[in-house]
Length: 182
Image (cartoon, rainbow, N blue to C red; front, side, top):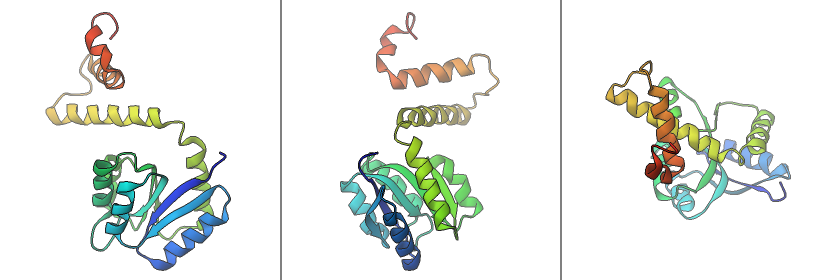
C-alpha cells in the first residue's frame, strides 16, 4: 500500500486510547486521524468522514458501541471499511457480534504488539475481499430470514433458493432472465 491506512478510535479509557494511538502511529503504514472518548462526538465525525478501520470499545458509558455501529451504518454506510472491537466481552455481547459484521474482536487487556499483527493481517487481505464479505453477509441474512419464517435447512432446494436470491442481490438484471440465466 502506498498511502497510509486511516484509523479512527473510540475508547473511553484515556490511557488505553493514548497507548493505541502511540503504537499505531509508530508504524509507518497506519495513521490515527481521530480518536474519541465520547461516543456522540465519534458518531458525528464518522457520519461525515470515511476511514479504513474503525476501532471501538463496545462497552461505553452513555451510549453503547452496538448502537453507535448500527447508527453509523444507517447514516454513512461507507463510513468505515473494517471494524475492530476491543472490550471486556460478556456472553450477551458475543451473541451480537455476528449481527454487527465485526472483522475482529479483542478482549481487554491485550498485547499491543499482537494488536499490530492483527492490523497487519486485516489490512493485508481486507480491502480486496469487500465483495466476498458482502456475499457472506447477504447469505447470512437470507439464512436468518428463512430461519425466522420456519424454512428448514435440510429442505430439498434450500441451497438453490439461497444461491438464487444472493445472485439476484448481486445482479438485479437476473430477475428479468429467471428461466435462462438464473
